[in-house]
Length: 170
Image 1 (cartoon, helix red, strand yellow):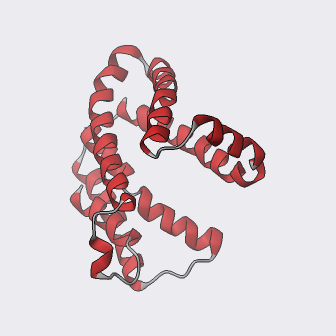
Image 2 (tube, rainbow, N blue to C red):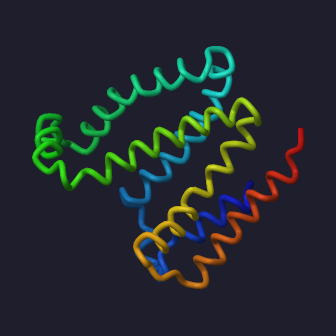
């Protein structure tokens, strides 16, 4: 699991790192908090999914996104009205966000489905390679150039996933 997650981190780091980039900033704090939240969510939700079923869980998850979105707006000191107005006025700018959101929902559904077949301690770390996969998609979709270190990180992430798959046998 550690190899998969480490590979994803290596693959997504910028090519050139400066010591000033390691200061505590919002763009570093939020992803770290997100990782903790996702890990807790995956662990806590596994038991609920087993008791209630996938559809009930996805419904509850969708329902809870509204107060969470409102909390995010408040944390960032943004107005709900301004956010909605901006999104509707610039709809063409947000079409990729909406498509990404759709894929996020589909991916979450498959994650919960995987919980039916594997423990959360196995299924959840496998999703940790999403960063490495995003780097690969950027390479093919946007022709981004990747450094040798990024390829190494992707290989590490995939090796970690293969290791999890080989170690976990029912």
